[in-house]
Amino acid sequence: MRFACCQLNPKWGERQENMAKADAMLARFTKGDIDVLVLPEMAFTGYVFHTKDEVEPFLEDTRTGPTVHWAQRQAQRLRCYVAAGYPERHVDESSGQLIYYNSLCFVDREGRLLKTYRKSFLYETDENWAQEGRGFDTVDLEDLGKVGFGICMDINPYQFKADFWDMEFASFHARERTDVLLCSMAWLQSRLPSDKDDGPKEKDVINYWATRLMPLMAKDTHHRTLFVACNRIGTERGSTFAGASAVLELSGDRKAILLGYLKENEEDVLVVDMDQE
Image (cartoon, rainbow, N blue to C red):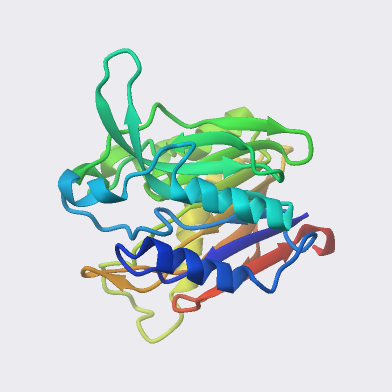
């Protein structure tokens, strides 16, 4: 089973250009090279929007939107599952209310939409325009097992106000005995000074993610979870993103094995073949 992260540097507001770039990055892969492909949060629109009016031209429908169509096309070409983030426009059927979400689509190898996951824990940038999703979720698949989803801030404490050790996201997936966790990220570089300013910062990011996933590595956990996080790179409207897309294998006795990662400024596709690990 091969898991891939397409870590790209999208241009803000240039959806078609960003899709073409991702197509070019994936062009070297064919059927059988990838089984699960993950893209960043809001992969093709850019991430930093200050108001609802600003994000409105980029909102997408869950079934007919350009990101879903892109994911379906690549899924059919590569015969793989695809997860990709986008800003969602949703009309509530009962009230007719228009609701904006920060969402992720997940399609199967034939391009069928299996899940629309909506970000549950909003970062301050999301709070400018999006509403919270209804909570963490999973789907059961014959070839992957139980698959869970996350979008960036989901793995942090709720609003950075909850107790750090509550670890809501990881605790949920530990209870669910989730087999594969797919996370689309727009994870920022730390704003805090570091003693390692002259060294690589990717491991700091990955170590933090692993810390937030500790409930999946409890001593009494006789279970393995694969964590696949796809981040973006570059600077957008004053925000700089951390890269460090990674695949981690999590198991009992606080054991996290880093199976592969990309550097903070590396625009590339990471592929981890679990059959060779």
